Picture 1 (cartoon, rainbow, N blue to C red):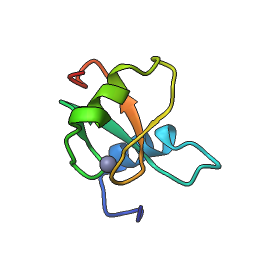
Picture 2: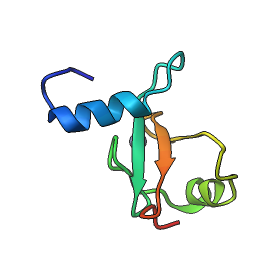
Picture 3: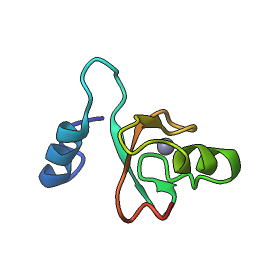
Amino acid sequence: MIAGTIAPDLASLYEKLFVSGHGNAAALLRQRTCSGCTITLTGSDLESVRSSAADEVLFCPDCGAILVRTEESGI
Ligand SMILES: [Zn+2]
């Protein structure tokens, strides 16, 4: 991520979501879509998200970002 190319409030949100030591930024999962790479989860990827515990850390199968589930995740 390059600082200065996105809005400051969004940047601070990403900083809060960033998990140190892993190297991947976090992305919100909205409407079954990764906000990092805009891929829509389908099939087995969607199933694995659905069957995961709420506190389990999930990764986007495409861009590797940590998927943060919200009430808008659509899962
Ligand atoms: Zn992604």
